[in-house]
Image 1 (tube, rainbow, N blue to C red):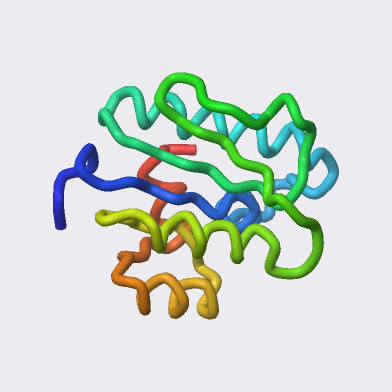
Image 2 (cartoon, rainbow, N blue to C red):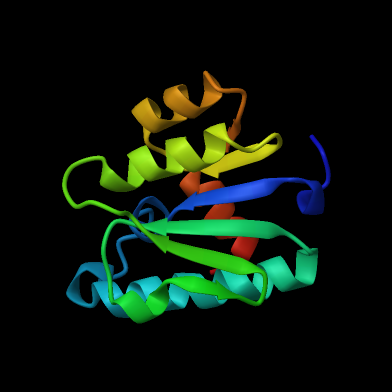
Length: 127
């Protein structure tokens, strides 16, 4: 596998957040903020390029800071974030998608992207 910095990571945010039943559902926006902060710290330490895709959340979460881009899915509904991740990853030469969603994993593998499970990535972050 190429070095962490050579890959563009695409993170299925709710899949990573939901990989641990820590009460995240009571404060979805706070859970998203915690994930974004953990990813930014990791990306900065590793020199990684990361795009985090959220299915919903406050508009102020979106944007790029500290080398991490946060995207809100442009539409709402089932698979909205998955569709956006698949679209973004398809246009990237060295994409690695973080998800445990089997359907999304199959979609992005078909375009040449690699996949890492949500729990494995969460452990990588130490979050």
